Image (tube, rainbow over the protein chains, first blue to last red):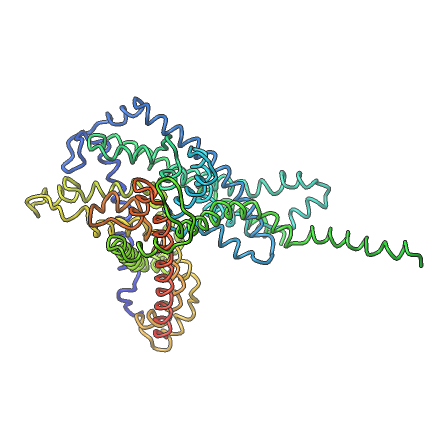
Length: 273
Length: 305
């Protein structure tokens, strides 16, 4: 065996470790300073406190924002997932002209600058005479969530064996019965995964909400408003930590479900292939 | 044969053909995707067309004059303030995409070639921070780089510096660092995917034919993974050029980018047509820059072989 120099697994794993530190370190400061007694985030730490967390439920504006975020997140994730199911099913099962172009268009919000997506929707909504509200935020969030929903669902639908559905139809199930008793159980984990991913994106999304909301704030908009006041920082850090934990949990569950969905369709399809 | 009999077969055939058409794959597939497609048309394509239309109009206080004019583009391209912001945004997004790709490549290589059974766990570990709120990640950089921030207090605690440095925050380097961190995961995935497609037997063949590890990497693996490098560069470059939050939070006066000017036109300055022209110009220039990047990487790829 020759020495493989800088391409060896050894050096690369050191680099990988440092890279993970670089990715996680900045994020970890939020929880650290959210339990520190000093109101400004700096070293050395002064002492442990949960006071900043205890203050959170006594802030009405924050509770309103949380409620708004919840409403927007639920509506956006359900709508985006329904539209994602239709599109992912069409993309994975059928072949037709312009299929790739349509797919590309639906995925486009992923690579466009968010500001430009946001202001163009703002212009149209104002032109159409829609007044800005949480509803317009939902419309915007659905657009940016669909590409993620599509990605999750396509990986769940791919390898889905059509002969299972055909067998069910041949054995006398109605179209709806086939969908409910064959298709749905197979893709359910992918659908739940898509709902969680979209909810997380909507919960964390700032730019589109910032442009498209009227007077009602979502959580990121509330945080943005608080950032102007240095004295409010510990509360923002505490709230931010809670959001980080929520995103982390939701995404972990989503990932586990997505993998289960991919495994399920592939294995069970394989049995009948 | 009677006329009636003669008339009916074509009729039956059209009905049969219409049924066949309705049940055909293309029609069913298209029908299924059409709600999502329409949604994207109405909320993405139509709005972008409206922006393009606005960029040729003029704002008169509260009304918009719809006579065709190129005045907004003249302002966007020649006024020093917008020209500088555009240049800076392009410079920042180009630098950020260069850094993210260079930093991401070894990780993608490591996961693909040395990840073993844990490939998906590695990918998951790397994407997790990306799923946390963008706003919060930018905020944590503000906490790190600030005057009383982590870095300054840490360096002072270690006795490396005597007083807090003001050079860390509120400039374009702070914007570049923050964006490089924010987009890291985005660059890893496409490079990883293209490295997974590299035929391992080709690398072995190169080694068997006497290429050292570095040479076989440069002549086989790297050129074959060029498509991943291209998509990684584009997926970072295009969105970062229009970033709003990072310049606003950590950029200060020297780190302002074009998105902040666009926002101002739709907010305080209330000049929608100019904001629209700035948006269109930004998109056009970043598209050109992206095209140039693709050409350069492809040329390098050919050169390497």
